[in-house]
Length: 318
Image (cartoon, rainbow, N blue to C red; front, side, top):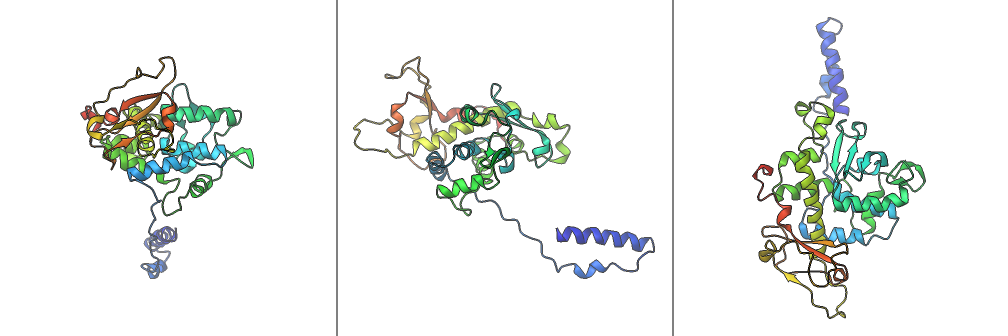
């Protein structure tokens, strides 16, 4: 800010000299004396194994349910922290699975569309029962007339063991950007979803918001499935007392696994939970993947992670 003020005043004096109203620019003496502040990047976890542990720790959060919902939703939508905590129910279309953030709330002052995955919609529907009668999705504990504080998500992360040098609320953007690029998704679609707009690309607020929307819908669902896989496949059995056998699938076999809702023991009329298994090439440093024995109590539908990567869609690649 100081450098900006010096530059403005220098321009004023330069104009004054040209007009004959000043003889010198006194700001010249300040040049080189004010050091530019180096911006510190927000801490973020990008390692696949650590992401899985982070998601399990978030699931184990025992604080306020509104804060818990924000923690669970943050990695799925990876918007800026201020955009998340200021979310309003009027912005959400749960039937259409899309979140329309008005430009007034965005850093770039442009409307933004966030496609909502099945997992994100489920979190929001549960939260709607609790806060849906008010204006804000995540109201403050001090009153529903305002949204949660800017530190709520970070405090929630601290409570489950992540300090400010390890993970922050802003870090979910970097997490998604890093992993999605490695997964092979179109960099332009990723940048658009992160709302990183270039001025020369803007041809109308809504037109920009809808850019690459079909690709982004696929990407956001694939991202949610990928996070679910990281959370499930590396989890340790909670109890060794249950002598039930657990399925072991190696990454080399995983991409051949087909969607199967007719497995023995899974009723056709019961809702099933998606358990995604990493395909070959996925950045998970574990050869044998064992499902959590606790998860075996739920009906399970096994889905290959092959669909999470745009391998058969060259137009999705850079």
